[in-house]
Image (cartoon, rainbow, N blue to C red):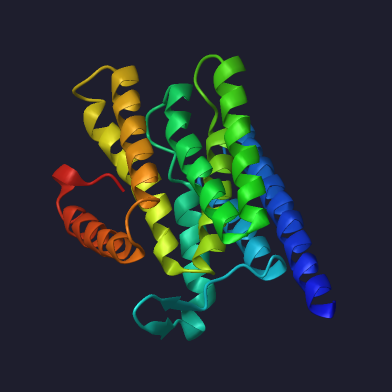
Length: 245
């Protein structure tokens, strides 16, 4: 009974810390845009929101495990902080994008929810589905270009859900990489060659394909895909021609 209460208390703290983190993200982004402050203040707000999740929500990855277990030690908090801030900005590109690009993170969030539901992790499944429904509502009702506040908030939610699943198994890094980063990278490449809507549709179909593949292949193959793509991604960033990060 005591263990159950402790577990429920931890989940409640996660919901609270996520709400506080989103409040910080929205406040600092709106304030920075209104007062035309330096983008450094955006980074300060994102770091503050991430620290709330890490310290109040106790959300961190202390070790990486699959075939072997690697303890992060003193790198635990820096890793979580870098991870959260990095993914918070994954939807923020230099150009204004049409709202339909939100199809890609929507697919990723649904994948998070289904995976968490299978694993029995209610926090990720509930928040992921709520975020996906919010995006669908914005797509149905929204007009014009989406604001930076909304894209940053969605990125922050995705970052939190990703880190939450990584606590259970690091192979879950497959979801943000193959259902979000890879499709977004493909979109950035295609948008200079195809109309924007076509580029987004193709990228969304790729995200959907990788989402479905995850549930039909073995966990070991998923791991090799993660390692292989990460190596290719790191090498590609050495050349400015293929750089998108």
